[in-house]
Length: 166
Length: 106
Image (tube, rainbow over all chains, first blue to last red):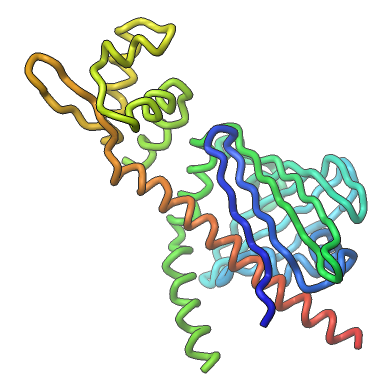
């Protein structure tokens, strides 16, 4: 199978994470998967979490309100406020944690997202830059994932997939 | 404990100190020469770094030398590695969705 490009760069000076990933599909389809809630619901939350959209208003000034739902039913609500949108080239957004009604939690860090889509022959390349205000902010977000045992669950999933693939 | 580590390295001066002593162990006076801040301020930064075990002290004669605690720095990298895993999982899920969507069209 063709190996898809994946780069993950952390800039601890600028508190940014840059993720570059190639997808075996055209730019329009990859754009749709990032911007339509019925498609986002099918991939955005890393397993075993599931994505559940409450509302989506994909336009400048609009926002996506969604929950990541754990297997035990616990919901982690997030909202993504869209700032600039230029289909199918890029969008920028402000990401944050909130409650089920979309009220932001002021104690948790927000991050600015800049997602750029470019053609790579018949494939699409997506660059996602996530910028935090400080490294401490970045750590808070990672710590939350750790706390929920996401890591160990992911590792269990890896081994499950290996078994299933045999 | 972990909280402290990240708060410690969130400060630009403390990050600069870590970068400086990564090359070789240094005394507080030698470190202070590289910054436009007081010797007291440098000592305070060193105390914080020492408390979260990012640096260790070593007595050599009359002088105390500070050096990087490599294992602790690695821990920070480990955390970022977890973040990378989340993205990998997320995107492999998107791969699956894209191939489903493409086969549905045909």
